[in-house]
Length: 377
Image (cartoon, rainbow, N blue to C red):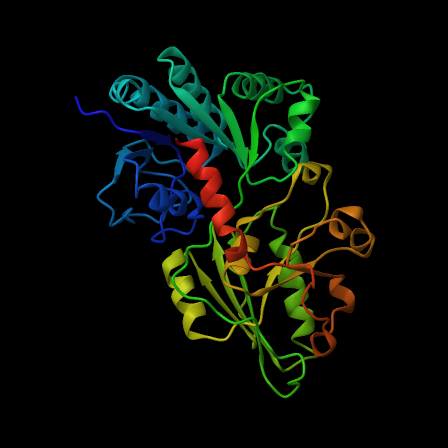
């Protein structure tokens, strides 16, 4: 049986045909120059459009899609994840015997738990990626209690993962704080996204062109963490007083159908490829986020839409409360292309210049590639 190199297990893996992040695909397109990679993912998850295909033109990347059940609530999502893990542990168990590395990512914790346990059983180097600090996220965004059984179960799994991984990587710059809190001693590597997009845009230069239209984009999931309601209410108000603004909204997994406005175009469930083509053909001046500091962010903050704006050299305007503007989190965030504004006082005609400490993400590409090479020697 031919030996392979990297086994990547990710329930929510996506390509540009869906609307999730292509962080992992970018990593593996680079690593596949020297490695053979097998990706195991689910056929049905909420980050993939229905009937979308993971079309990847790379002979060194093999994708295995497990045909899990579809879900539309958290109970069925749990059942779907457990079914995925059961099939992984039986039908595809042989993959753990023929690969040199196992790479899994959180969230979710359950799939990574199975992956880590099987990697340990077969004595394979196990690389764990942490992109969201579960179960801390459940407290921050779902308001569950620390004595909730669900929290306690996930806390046990979290500790198990950190203690039994060969190395931990994260796009959260200060994740080592969490390891210290849990008294876990393990190797930690900070790993931002690669910027491998095939076109570059110059940053908008409209600050002195007050007669021009200002084009603004929002691209993200409609949920509590993203605070899209804050953005939509802001847009409704500012469109009444400023006729220079055009908003293009790309919204995903929304339970609401928002009312169309004179200066707003809203499109639902468009794949990332569509969004990139739109940005390529149109001048986009700003991207919107609405992030208020939470204690969870002491480990780092790396939302998908912010990374999209950053990688396309689009200035990010973050709408947050007046109290939040003064928080040390923002003042200490070097190399982050954020301009923070209280939405009640934002005037696009007098917006300040780009963060002078910001470096375009391509600046970091060589460093990230070097880290990847050291992980998979």
